Image (cartoon, rainbow, N blue to C red; front, side):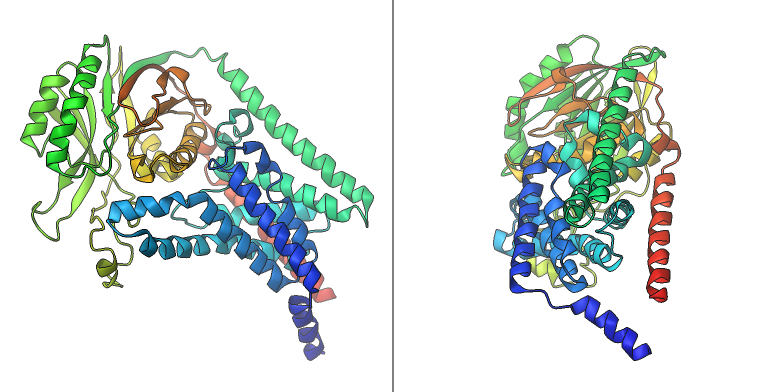
Length: 529
């Protein structure tokens, strides 16, 4: 009896699939890859996100479990590669390595990132979720759990394709990016299940299509409601005028001597900002050259002369060991300068792998030989909000350096300490003039909706802008990319809360519970059969 059951299980896993069906499944998976690239910020056709997964989900309907896993792994790996190809050049520049060395590392990263999607595809077939209305919802939940709640180095996904569609992503204030991800996947899988059911059960197929429309319209309606509601908020607001300075320093410039040359073109911009009326804070973002108000006397003199009247937020490098040491290490830090002195500092806590440190260097010391010039930064140990004087009251700002803005928990720490506005300083020049800038913006700006806070994003070459608590870019805050310039924005900070801010784990718990129920239900059904 047991032997027979094991044989049936084996046959369900490795049931032969015809060459024609395998080829069709492969083509459908590749179509999903193309749609993903076009939908993601790299392609810019966000509307395609609502059908991106339909081809590969249809392919799973006629696949066995092993093929389902491989299809998911292939589609997700290629999707990741298409989405972050720009990282190859950037990492090569930062580490002073060649692209042929970096490419295998990026590919391995994409392969690891694809595993949750491969497992989700395997479970979609294993749990028979491709032939019912409930199966579509359960499959979307499982995709959400695996892709969003497993710690990830770069937590990007299909939800970020909608970053310029505020009315479609407002549910992030309830369940974060994960809930938006679920909505997109539920619509995709419902459409796919509906298509596969057309031949066998038109009633259920119709139910799937109708439910997909209901979910889409419900999500859109919620977004419209929240955005319209924002226009009627009348609670008192704190006001602050912030100037974003975009220095546009080329990444080829890396030395103190290079910085001396860059000062000449930046001097005029800083003086113009200093002459502006009622500027409460000027932000100079992360740049490729080493600067610091506190640790370089000549920098203190330069900024004192040119930004005398205006408080300055400077992203700097704080040396930990001697600068001439072969094993020198540093803090990537923000310095808040007011009254000609550094009032507060914040050391970056989440470092970018390869860009700021070598992962697994202690366990694999040979990595230093492969990437001899990879930076060696030290992570900070605590969140340090800045107290900035606004027009009438002090404002508590949450400082985030570069990559930190893609992680909700970093903002949560600052909000818990009274943070009222998010300031993100970044240098996306490493990724040249390609989709890397858009992807970084997309991953960051969801924080504004999740926590209903303004996000001020100051970058070296772009995209620099202010995003309001509803994910909308203030048009007058944008600075043309790859130019030297500045913008001034008056920000009215109101006391807004979100469900996600207060109860960040509720949606996660619900999704984990549904996943557990689905797997348990399948095991019971399988045991009866």
